[in-house]
Amino acid sequence: SGVKNAADFIQLVSKNPGKYSYGSSGVGTSLHLAGEMLKSQGNLFMTHIPYRGVAPLTNDLVGNNLEFGVFVLSSGLPHIKSGKVMALGTTEAKRSPLTADIPALGEHKALKGIDIGTWFVLMGPARLPEAVTTRLKTALAEALKAPEFRQKMEASGSTVAAPGGDVQRFLASEVAKYQKIVQFAKIEQ
Image (cartoon, rainbow, N blue to C red):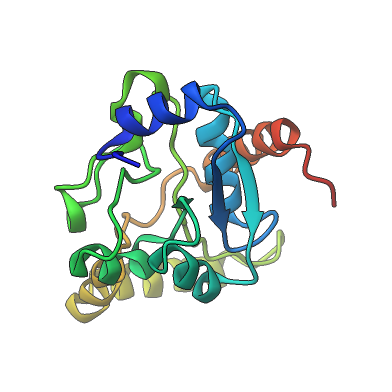
C-alpha cells in the first residue's frame, strides 16, 4: 500500500473512505478502542474487524490478509523486529522507551489527542483499613523497585510508573476518555 508512517496512513485512508479495515483482538477491547480513537482523531472511515484474540489477528496481518491491525506492543514487537510487520506508531502520548525508534501517533498533527495505553492498578475495597492500605502501598513500592520486575515489565513493552499519585483522578480521566470513544464507536454492552 506504500504506507511507511502515520502521515502516509492518514493520507491513504482519508482518500479512500471505507476501503480499508483494521483488526483488533475483539469488540470493546483496549485495542478496539485505540483503533476507534485513531479513527475519531484522524477523521478516518475504516471498518473494524474484531478477532477472537491476538493470535488470529497476528496471523492475518502477517499473512497479508488484513491491511492494518492494533496490537499490544509486546505482542507485535517480535513481528516488527523480524520485518514481517511495520509499526506506524504507538498509541500513547509519548514514545515507549523500549522502542524509541517507533513514533507515538500523537506526534502527528492530526492525531494530537491519541493516548491509549494499558495500565494496571492495585485496588481494594473502599473501606480498607489504613494499616492494610499502608502495608500494600509499601509492598507495591518495593516490588516496583525490584530490578528483575522492572526488566520483565520493560521487556514486555510496559513502562513502570512510580507508585502513589492521584489514582482516583487518573481513573476518572480514563473513564471519561473511554466513554467518549465508546460513544463515537457506538459500542453497546
